[in-house]
Image (cartoon, rainbow, N blue to C red; front, side):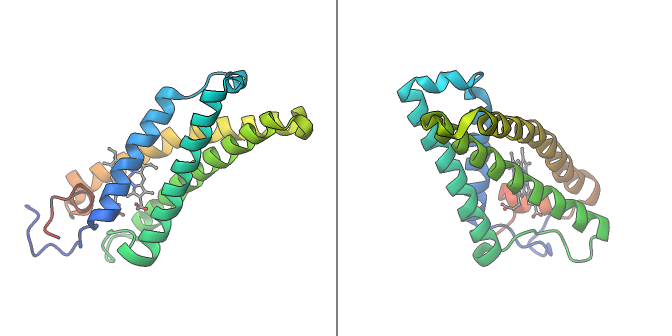
Amino acid sequence: MTISAQSPVKPHGFVTRSIHWVSILMIAYGYYKGLDNVNQLADPALFRFEVIFASSLGLLFAFRLFWTQKIGGATRLPHKAPAWEHVASRTVHYGLYGSVFTIVGTGLAIAYAYASPVLGDFFVNAMIFIHEAALTLLPALILTHITGALWHKVIRRDGVLEAMTGKLPI
Ligand code: HEM
């Protein structure tokens, strides 16, 4: 089956698609560039960069959530898709947002606590633990998300992947 202009799937708009692909680049860069040790924050230039990077990623995801929920529309999963696909898709999307917000929030908390030692070791260690747990969870969710996209491309052939890659007429 080819995806045609009669496809029931409405493509994601330019803004949603652009944010989606920019956030992939930012997340890939974040993993590539990530710190190995909290003491690297002693370098003021690196400290500043980490805070700006984390804040930008957080703001991008907050805007993305607002945009898809209020303006551009969220999932393009067809209404008639099985209930388990709706549940799986929603769970993974919430998980992706939740992991990114957790990584950003705990990252900023670690930076804040590092700059103001009054918060103590327990707080810093708890934030580092949660930060690392979310950093471990996110790749697993991304892998599940990509598997889902391929499921729609190869098995369902319903245009859900093409709605995000921009191969459908807008
Ligand atoms: C090659 C990698 C990826 C592919 C092929 C892909 C594909 C897709 C597709 C097809 C959709 C639309 C699903 C729907 O309409 O229900 C989507 C939505 C979404 N994707 Fe991805 N994605 C990829 C990577 C990522 C990554 C790394 C993230 C990082 C968090 C991400 C986060 C999301 C989120 C949160 C949505 C829900 C809609 C939104 O808020 O933009 N994706 N993706």
